[in-house]
Length: 431
Image (tube, one colour):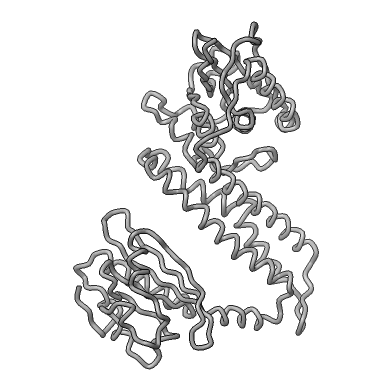
């Protein structure tokens, strides 16, 4: 690695492809966020980009390039090289430290790149006193407005935390349909309609219309109501993602033996619970009858089954036409009990899935939706933003059940050419 004291473009030599590509990004970041301080180190713990002005005052920033942090001198917060070694192994850390009567927060984390094996260490530094002073200087904001700003900051930290579990689904990203649809749909869910996008818009409108004096501000009540509404929606969205994370990380369920009669009762109870949701599009649920079901049993978690049934019903309601019938068929084979949830589709995208080539698998992966439109009327939906069917599959598999999705020529609906069917197959307990 060659080091120079001339321009930022020379901090990492051009033969280091990753470094040379990142330097312009770091430069833009530095100019866009002049108060942010950070430094970047390579896998040998040598500095390749320096911007820690709180400590390196009076020194040419180029003089720190090529050095380890421990070699920066006594004007810097003391941090052992061992910390950087641990970060290279994947352990990020954050500390608050008092240095020369100033309080700093230091975060050190690993930068990895999907296309090669290069690793960089990113050290970010914030003076906590500065953050307090900045808040105090905004005298034209009310305490409630400041509270909302802090809630927003907390919100984004929560999102970043939640998305750590994205590592769990990287292996599924090979599905081309999922890759094409999932992240754009996630952006739609988070930033369009009600939610974070509307929350930010509401904040902007509130600030623009506020009548300020030296200590207080008066804002139209309508804007406060809008802000509060979108704040609640965003909180619900974050809760959805947090609840989904818990389900994805859980490895076992509290299962029990239930007779088929008890299982069917659970489904009946969920249909009753969903009656107000069915009325949104004047839909109806029709269930088949199964006889001699007292003695035969399956092993399930009752709470997990309730969630599965609710999510499948909500999915069928949202993506079926007005007045549709959602059909539940119960089947038995020699060793298996099968529940089939059948509904007519109301959009062509689902009919174009190539099930022969397993394209339907994408439906059970997080954030995948074939339609960008978000229907927010279904308030009893536990897992929106493309998380419903992935939760269904995860819970079913945790109960050793199998999930199937098919789109076939309709053998049930007289006026529909196609039908969508989700099947859950449980193995029956041997008597």
